[in-house]
Image 1 (spheres, rainbow, N blue to C red):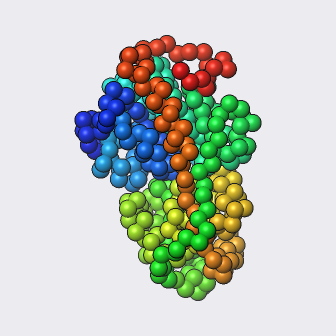
Image 2: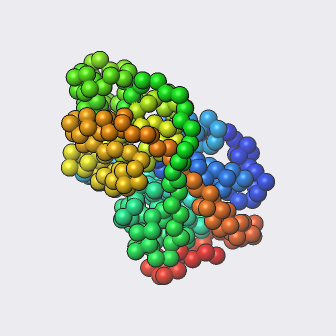
Image 3: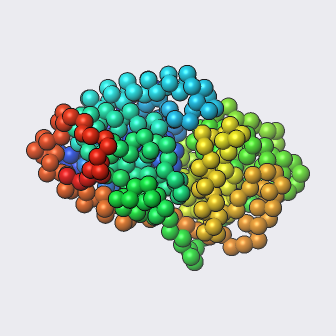
Length: 373
């Protein structure tokens, strides 16, 4: 349930620098996957995760302390109704307040998104240092979360040079790394269709089912449909899968057809899969905005994926990826990790002096929002 804590005890998470406590705030899809890549930063310190309840965040709770909060996003009003968004936001605000008051983190690091805003606000009010890492999903414009939460941050980081137009003082770390010549694992004639962590994406699943029925897909198909998603006859399908199970399937899958989330794309590319991305579109009520179109376009420009939005485009994209050599890629956050390590080491002495407690909220409009103390 939201607000519960699972995983290891506080003592088990305390490392060599037990005096510094970190809150790792990230929603339960690609945002929290990037947080996992940053383990060399937070691993040595006492830490806890704050996330909405998804299969990935539940898998993390087996090894780490995780506080679950109610999922909310600023764009929920577009597809779920304003009242539902406000209700979820209020519950998340209360839950986050209880967690932050009890845990008293010295530093909160967040990769977004909307579910974590209340935690950012509470932590800032109680004197914690705030680090916002703008989502890797954002190449051209800031997310709604970063536009709202950015003024609360002591330090802001972007992963696309274009975003310095919005945050001129933010350091840039592009983690995407192509792996030319990387050996490809042995693959089976298997196509894995996945819609991400929880939300259904019927257009993607229906397109795959149509092509399978027509014989355009000869491979065996395994589909992960999302909770309540369409489950067509003739497809082996499941609503959700633990992250470990997804990785096992990707080791065998020759082709992956997935939504345009960075977590799904990079996870498939790491396993040497041929990838076709189908971006969710806000005009169809599939997402809050069109950032997945922005993501898939950027990946396609690097030659990593093919993009499709209709069954006919999917047919052509599958032909395209079958005919070309697959390109492996991964995220390499080593430079970002080094930057964050230095930042937190500078703050560690302050934490030891108990200088973070009950500091009043500073001005949100001054140029000093991204200062480092």
